[in-house]
Length: 142
Length: 148
Image (cartoon, rainbow over all chains, first blue to last red; front, top):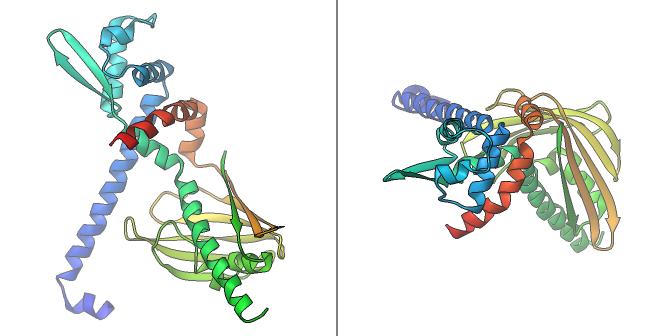
């Protein structure tokens, strides 16, 4: 394998490029996560998301109603949420409607659950392995 | 600090499960996040002994390594080990893995606890209190992803 890498020059740039690609993907996903968590850290923004959970596609002024803060402040929160990709806004006439986007939240949850996923998959294989060992021991009459 | 607890019922006697968990041969058969192969498994299962597992994660075709020290060993009931993750991500520090093996009618009940997961983001996130918010939105997301 090493010889192949040394003699065939064309393998090398490919390796470097693909590892850069993985690295850039990892950096980007870390940045996306940071933006998601930053957006979720504020209680007003969480309340806005919770409202959207009940009435997806509401207008900004509808969403602003339960809050004591003014509309411009709500708009600013909306910018942060949109920046993190948690909501999308669309304008028709004078009304701006807001919709939830599930993807960044899903990524955030996957990140939080990464250990659980790791071990859950591992333990599934452990179970299969131990059970096959048990069957083997029984066949041998132990 | 966060922790993960998982329970599995296994149709095998406790000694077989204990060996699968502590020996290099056993570990090589199951350790890792996906179907990627274990590349190196070393284990010295006695108090103060170390283990090291190197595996390939299929998802990003990258090698990762976890290693640590056996802190407690009571065959065939209990194993406690320290756990450290290397490669791919910034070092999240040392955490603790505790495995309890109990005899039940069908064979073994294994309880797996990974605790003291004190990565910086997790700490900050808990202080920020958004973990609860994520939980609330979880049901919503589950419905959504089914719809797609």
